[in-house]
Image 1 (cartoon, rainbow, N blue to C red):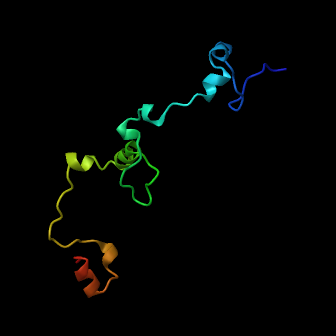
Image 2 (tube, rainbow, N blue to C red):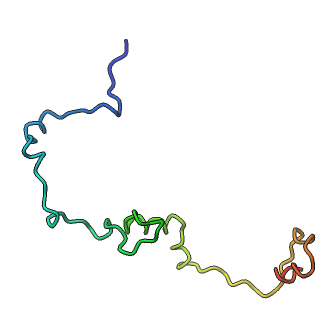
Length: 103
C-alpha cells in the first residue's frame, strides 16, 4: 500500500492559524477607503469593449507579449520604390501586378 499524498483539491489546515482566526475576525470587513490598490492593478479607466475587465498591468503586458516595444529600439526598414520580383506573382494580371508593385 502506498503512502497517503494529499491532492491539490485537498485543503491543508494549519493548526496555528486556527487559534488566531476566529469567527469574529473572519466576519470583519475593511471599509472600502482603507483598501490601497496600486494604480497598475486598477481596471482601465477608458476600456475598449474587448478589454473592459483587464487591469492596466495586464494591458501593458499584452503589448510586451507582441514584442512591440522592440519597434522603438529598431524601427522597421523603409521599403524602396523598386518593384518586387517574386515568381509567385506570375499568374496575376498586368493590372493586379502594377497595383502590387510587382514585376
